[in-house]
Length: 122
Image (cartoon, rainbow, N blue to C red; front, side):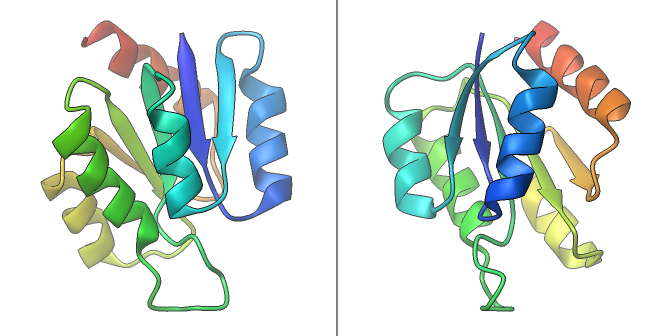
């Protein structure tokens, strides 16, 4: 089972990769273009941060990727995460097809349950 993790913060990518590497084959990306490229290599599930640039407070590249994913690979379940507690971002993510919206910092036990549920739903 290949899991694509998309986040612009390298430490966060490594942390999630280390936490999940025993259950999944992990693929990581830190930008919109890299995420698209890695997704095209074949993935089973995606975990995507909404904002892929901490410097740009209007950045929503994670939602752009989610929209691209649902158009090009609709069978791949996506889970969206964000440190920003903006209600409209969660609504937008779910409307674009995300299965779940998780708040950062990620609770690993909750994430494991969500990933398991998303896998079984396919």
